[in-house]
Image (cartoon, rainbow, N blue to C red; front, top):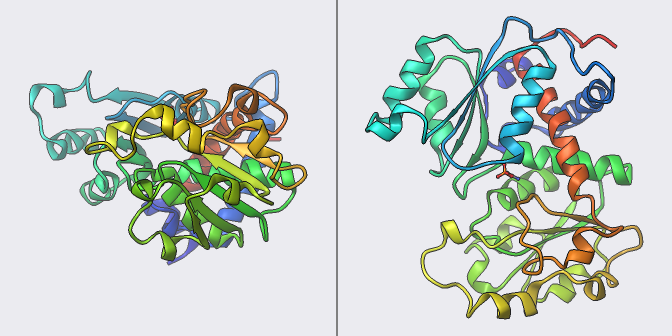
Length: 313
Ligand code: CP
């Protein structure tokens, strides 16, 4: 399958992309960032194309950045949420998607609470489908913006030591980053209480630990995750205060990291639970850079998937 055919079909998992695809997306995103820095933040590249953002779960960053990305490239962008759609009147997901298909969109961005929903939807439509986060499964565009953030700040990805700390078992961000980061030659450690580590953690990561001090020691990148209470069945740790005592990323703990280390968090952040305020807002933090790069990466993905010409410089 050619690069263009692959892009046209779908972006559901980081496993859909080779390292060459990832590099192409990150290079394109750098060009797209330039458009966002102009006074007039608009290129005609996707004029006449229709993008539907279907979000069946809450979102601030992903939804807004996909909308901005589409509009900066002159696409017609339509936003639908589950609450405001006929799903709330009992329409099935398949019927709803069939109706969206009948309106002939070029690309469907899907966020859904059920793992596998974007994959299933991609079989019901003939347009491109992009996964904007599905259940515990994957969040590939978050991984791509995380990779862009690290590459822009450190100049490389290959050989960097990354530690992902928190609720690994319920995190689609961790799952996508484990695939994407390892594909790009990064060494990934996962860290969390045993109850928040997936059963195959040892196969998915280069290293597994339940001690945050061990995870942070010498790390070039520390990615903190929030506790995904919405995906938990029952209590996985005694209480939030105990969790925070064991796993909150404090400035004292960050002193163990490598010189020039970065702190990432996909958001939303629970300050004082998984990350101390002075770390989230301090010199290690690139959390808001991630948001900025998120627009650039999503512009690049829309551009590459829809196969437009190079944006005007
Ligand atoms: N990182 C992320 O997916 O944030 P939102 O839920 O706000 O989109």
